[in-house]
Image (cartoon, rainbow, N blue to C red; front, side, top):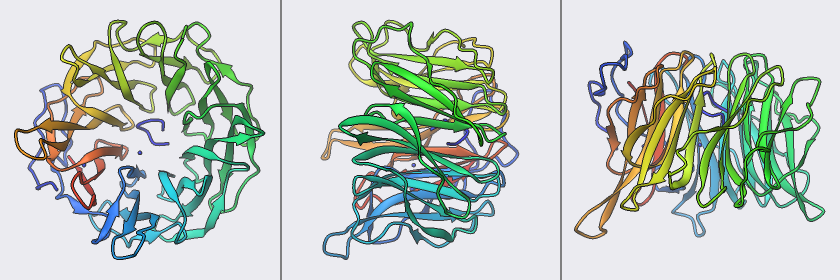
Amino acid sequence: MKRRVIAGVSVAATAGIAVTATVTMNAEAAWTSASNVSASGWMADDSPRVSVDRQGDALLAWTAGDLSTTYSYRRVQTRVKFANGTTGAIRTLSPDGASVAWPEADSDDTGDSAVVWEQDSQVVGRRVAASGSLVGPVQKLSTSGPATGPVVAVTPGGTAMAAWTEIRDGSWCAVARRLKLDGTLGAPITLGSGSAEKPAIGVDRNGQFVIAWVRGSEVVAKRITSTSVSSAKVLTSSIASYGGFGMVRVGVDRGGDAVIGYHSGGGDRAQVWASRWSRTGTLAAPLRISASTDNVGFHHALATDLDGDSVIVWTRYNSSGKLELVGRRLSAGGTRGSVTTLGPGDRPDLALDDDGDGMLVFHTVVPTSTIPYSYTKSSARLVSRSGIFGTTKTLTSDGRVPQVDARPSSRFTVIWQQATHPGTIKSVTGP
């Protein structure tokens, strides 16, 4: 879990990013040069992740295989990108020969992190120290299999909570488990029946977790403290969804008020919704975030600042059948801001700093008249705390699936996969 969600973009250095007048520039208004994150001669996958601590140090995580080996087995790898611009060594978290995928990472205030991933049809995890060194062995988190869709959040003091779904006795079950600062495990926490959909997790500044997941034909959530697990709160009872629910996202403010975003398949088209669940247990009626006429696409992103204000960006198909991005602000009081059409794009990701200044990153497939007839570029837009989107800055003309996280005040680290072979993982920090 990062402030952006919660639930993972070659660039030349530039003097800044052009934005609308309503977007305040940070004093450090310059982008670093993009750097290679993964090792030369390794081929990476399109699932990199980034988590930034409160000093601005970033843990970068990805999967990649050594092309010089016969089978190029995938490994989960990490390295730290420090706020001073230096990078640590690449660390391999997973064993040789294992089948690994979909790493997720989060960090505490001082940079101690937890990484979880799928490995051989199970969910596993490992701690990484702020220096980048590994803490303890790989730990098997799941209790049955197959297990899928791991997510993770870390409290300010360092306790991690992972959540996922697994098959037990032929049915899906949602499960959570602590992965402690020293790398040891807590007992499994059975949340209840679930689905193959990936859950979502967030944590407040007091260390209270919010986990949301799809249970049959509804979205439910629970709160977990150091001593208790709440009963499940059904978020979607007032929404008809003939196609079911999915793509759950969670944002949590400093005190524990949560915003949970999700897709529904109700009526003749998918919609994007958000439910607001207060720290006292009050559940507001679901808010339709997309327009009822939107032909909503697959992906959306949600980020919440420490005051509880959120930004939500989703994809929809325009009148030409092409994907475009759309965004709006959702205030802590539940007021929906105006909708902004953001132009062509897909795979959005968002991060907000403590006060709500943010960044949206995304990629766009651009058609060309020559072979291979398209290229994929990754871009960024700043977002003001009032919900105004700045102009688009192209980060690279050869990058896909960018991910972003923020330090406490308006400085962002972006990671992406090079779109062309060998799919090198790259990163940049700015503005």
